[in-house]
Length: 293
Length: 266
Ligand SMILES: [Zn+2]
Image (tube, rainbow over all chains, first blue to last red; front, side, top):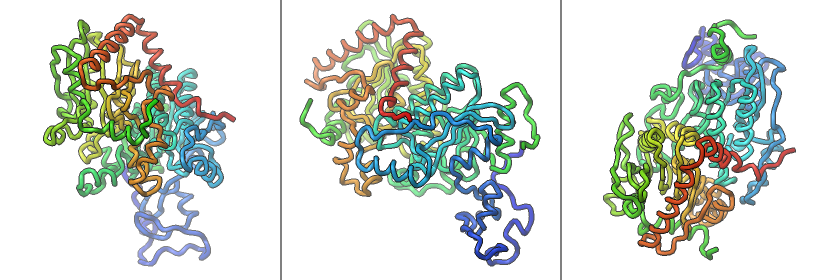
């Protein structure tokens, strides 16, 4: 299975051409965005047509959870579970109710994770995908419960679980019970694992805090997207605590690979193949490089 | 119920004159033999662990130690464990499982250490592995929150059959200062944040996160330790005779229900 750190440009055109000016799209009015990595203006349609990656440097743009599901699950195979399970402001935490309301109105999702059952490359599995645009994927009681239930459903059905993490950590507005979701999800992962079932997790940018310290690091196989920030403590907190300058590339997917905490970095261009192959490997089939539909 | 504010309790939980982890070991256990190292990288002085007798019962005891003098506090990293501390604890818990010894943990930390080396050596992975393993550890575990219960760094030693909390100890997902600076960009509003976070022992008990509050009457004195020692002994004696399956099922159920009451299902 081809595993590369970033998608290398195939030719001069992919690098953005020889001209120093930003590439001009056919339609002058076509919306474009500046790549935060190479700083080139890239038309949005090109990014969307390239797995939400920069066509110039391969930078992986953030995807929302529905885009992820469309990307990884076989078409029309996804059946969502517990979509109506949401957090209540049970501690009357200052500003939380309003924050939930505006987040739900602006993004369309009602919680920071979407769970369900899907096929990936023809293999049935549980799938959870965290939502960066819902309070930065923070884990409250609803996120913990949805993920726990997914592992329980899949344990009962004897199916593997594929998870995509993106999270700023535990949701402080739900206090200590958010913290307890780390223990609860870990318990569910442990039972699924004890039943001999496969759990594959893909860490995406950013995966931090309580999610890193629980189900993100509990996969049988842990993949990561190129350049993703992955860590426990926030970089700023570490800087303040240690009063040291952080090394280059600190807490990136590549840093985690170097230090032995992820199995492989897989860019989106080959990610569906990789996930499908690993799923098949654990259902008795062989790992292949067959192209997935 | 006391009339102290939540932030008063945070200050009490952090107070330098409070008993530290080693005080509990020395006062309540006999013949403590300290065991060092995670067999992977090093030994973390922020966690003190080893073998001891609780009356006639052999146990493995694990305590986060903040230190008291300036020098010792620096040596103990102010009770902020590195990954090797959690891995030492895990190693000794597995050893306890092998020899069918109960485990007693004393938790007192502002949180897992936020350092460069801690990240390089997988702080998140170390905590995650403790959560998963403690959930299925085949021996009774009691964790006592004796001071600060700082987030994942505390939880990594508090997945247990019984979780007890001292009257003026606190347990929180984030420090009040951290919460205030994220929420209001103003760490000086920590007292307000502390009240909102519901981190006092009464709150923790009411959420079902702790099973019992240990009164602090005579804290650090003979009767206090004798009372706690008796409670630990009786509780462990009860847990030890449970069939392993019921013990583990109850531990799972204890954590499984947390947070479900606050949910809405539409
Ligand atoms: Zn770029």
